[in-house]
Image (tube, rainbow, N blue to C red; front, side, top):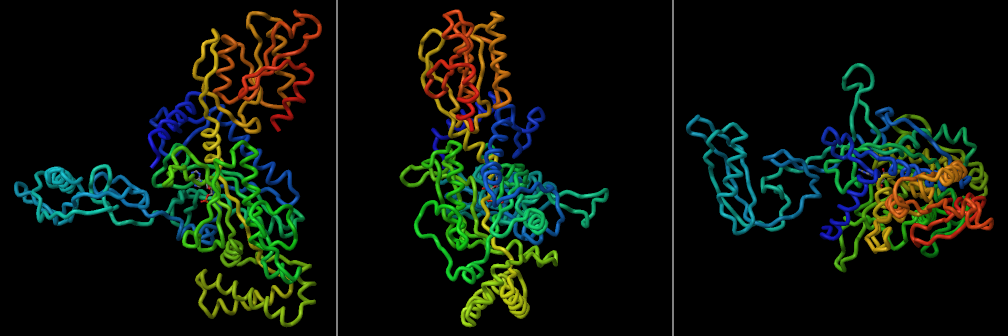
Length: 599
Ligand code: GAP
């Protein structure tokens, strides 16, 4: 449980987000829509900066990743192949009294006295209910409180004056069968598919059901062959996509952390299977030490590629201002892994609402998952679409021909085993798996395979929330009269700050100052986001920008106009938000100085 201090901090963050226009509740004028959020002027800029820094670092600054922008609604068979139709569900339970729905794994364990009833009857109206019901009440509470709840339950079943039947009670420890809010029994857990459904076309029939994508990843797999063909890339290479995803979460919570509509930034990085690496390079490079393994090498196996992407992603977060100490690298345990995953590292951020460990340290909540997904996804689309997802690898073909017969048999057998395991898990009969895996083994010898994939998958909204939480800071700063007051300052890294620089004329009623300040704004505008503000005392204007997280402030004063001599003419003060220090710089140097800091 988050403690009350963390709760208070979250309240301040939520309130500032609304007050300053980072995040609003969706459809607020109509009372809001649970799990949906809008981003105001500052939030919209922040999100753009997140997506741009991600895109730049994942695609534009690399030779081996290309982009994709696919539709949100895709062929429904995609979700059958990916497993989302059958398995993308959470267990849910409903309160038998209020019908409120909970995720089964989020019901807090409780202890108390459970009262059971076999039914009720209403003699005045000659009615009876044989529905069993139960209520949990804290120890020491009179049985009447359980009876009151039970009567409400039977009243909802049409009994006006229910007389309870068959009451019995027993103490119970750590049960999750009762609604913590009212003690009513919950239904048995049932799977609830999280995909949001719609109909494509004018007829609302079962044939026309489609889904809003629950992740952006599947479009990348479905378009793998097209992208490969047009991009002149060769495995290993990646395809990146940023876009909306939708999940009908049972309990949206923790502000934007678990939403029903959100954005993902996903990379599918395709690599050779280890057997192909071994055939070409005679051995497979595996992680030697923790940390970043350096520049990619052609003999890397899946484990080192996985480590590489975990470290690359950690570097990214540090680069946009999340300190390493605020992040946790969590290796999923074997029993936590998705059935197709060979390894998954969750990158967690220590949100104020995260649980604490026994030492009182925040444990963190997931920002991103980096999964080694083997060849599962492409293999599934190959089977469901009936189209080959294999690539031809000239180097492999040439290397295979030079292997000794023993080595060919050894590698072929290992590849066969891996393919057979996948096919059996995917539901093929033992006989079919055997046959298909043998064919795959023969294809490998000719240079063909289905690429494996490493998937770093991050959420834009979770990152925006992490950056907001990380930036929130209260300190002491002097007001206009020099008296110390509490200052709220959003210490965003300049790379992701919504506004990079604010430009102020010292006084608004001096046209020379105003004109010069507007000139400075126009000078900076092509290079970064600029905010011009002339309203109120200068100290107030600084405070407003501190709350918006603007890292730099430029003030045009009388020195700028040359009133203190020619040396200071065309200079301005440049204020640093965090240090609250000002230096004088030449207007002609501003673009150079600031561009370096915000890039
Ligand atoms: N393709 C893999 C995939 O979608 P995921 O762990 O379900 O994996 C990846 O989602 C990321 O998407 C998460 O780490 C998180 O940042 C974000 N995400 C997932 N569900 C979310 C939700 N309900 N609200 C906000 N962000 C979410």
